[in-house]
Each structure stands twice: as structure tokens, then as C-alpha cells.
Figure 1: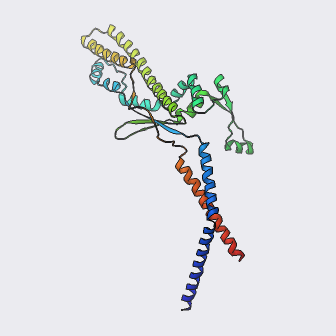
Figure 2 (figure 1 turned 135 degrees about the vertical axis):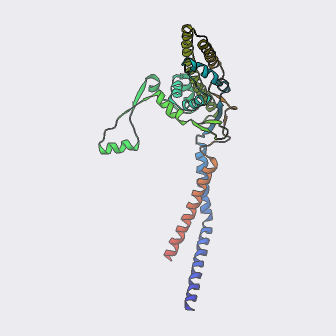
Length: 315
């Protein structure tokens, strides 16, 4: 019975403590609101000075031109009669190469050679390439990361790094291009983050054209060399069946060369028009405001609770 009374007494004291704490928080409500609004004002200031980034997308599929040119199994059979192996480039292989090249240094090297593009990128993306790098083949830079700091403390040698314009373009642009393929539809999405959506769309179109033209030019050279070889073989062959095989294979290679010589997409073609995200993806406005609101609210609440415990310790 005594234990029960004691328990009730402790329970009452705890209840009184919670009530006092709640009253203290209520008393400090304007102080808490002031802190919350101060943090909200700071978040708005941050957002007003922030650089907003948009996601730019375009979708591609294997080119129909390539698909239409690949039904040549009968030509392979004919060519095999005389021991020839045709330089095949299936639609899947060309498209896979396209997805690799679009993020490669082949693209970054081509972009670096385009001085007008470098100027436009610097202006539209708010990034200044080092002037020395635009005038020289490379510049020497020293690593200023935390690793270098510790190396200095330990007396270890710090090796300078040679940087070219191609390196910088690759780091800033092509390495940041994302490529993803849907499992069911096989449609591939190419994306890039840009602070200027209009320029970002132009950039992705340019990157697409560079990658597709690279594969087109490779195909042109391959088929041209093979056509020359087939013509030489045709002059040296007298057997009718072998000549028929050569002529048929030659016709197919000339058809492939004609497709590669056209102005149409070679390995990949756009599936619809490039587009941008409806709102900035970085920083996210809602998340920034929510974070600053939460910090302000819990900071004000924490200060009010600290004030309460200081008061009861003094009493």
C-alpha cells in the first residue's frame, strides 16, 4: 500500500514536470517562432543566390537504317563459298558502341577542338576554362586536396599533374553524361545536368551527332576498304559461282556504304525531342525550406528545454 502511494506521488511529480516544461515551451513560443522564421529567411536568401540545375534528357533507339541493312545472312553464305568473311556490324553492336562512345574521350576530344563550343559552354554554364589551357596544349597543376596536405605534413613528394583541355572537357561534360536503357522497351535515355536548359539541349544534340558520326565514319572506311578488296578479287576470279558470290557481296557492301553516306542517323536515332525537367533538380526548393524549417524549430525547442532545466536546477 505504501509502495502504491509512493508510485502515485512520483507519477504526480513527473506530470507536474511535464506540465511545467510544456508551459515553458509555450512561454517561449515567440522566441521559437523567431528562430524558425530566421532560418526560413536564410533559406530564401540561399535559394535566391543558388545556381539551379536542370536535368536534360533525350531518348534514342537503334537506327531503322541499320536495322534495314542487316538482313544479309544470305550474302554471308555466298561469301563463305570463296572463303570471304564480310565485315559485319550488327544493329545491336553498333548501338552498344554508340552508348559507349557518347561518354568517351572521343566525344570530349571533338568538343575540345570546337573553340566556339568552348566559348558557349563557358558563357552558358558559368564555367571559365583556364586561359592558359586555351593557348597551350596542357598546363601543370598541383593537387590541393586533403591528401596533398597530409603528404606535405609527412614530407612525402607531391607529383604535379599534366592537364589538357580534353581532360577538363571530359571531367566537366562527357563523364557526367548518364546513359540508361529500359529492360522492356530497350529505349535508351541519355541525360545531362545543366544550369541552362536550352544550352543543355543543344549540348546533348551535339554529343549525339558526334557519337553517331564517329560510327558512321568508321563504317564508311570499313566498307570502302572492303569494296576495294572485293573489286580486286572480282578481277582475279574466273569461276562463275565465285564471281556471283563476289558480286552479291559487293552489292551489299555498296548498299551499306550508301546508308553510311546519307545524312540520316546511322547507329542511333532520336525517339522524340529532347526535353528538360519541369523544375530544378538541384537544389530542391521544397527540401531546402523543409530542412531549414526543421533546424530552426528543433533549435528553438532545444534552447527552450535547456532554459527550463537551468531554471529548475536553480530552484
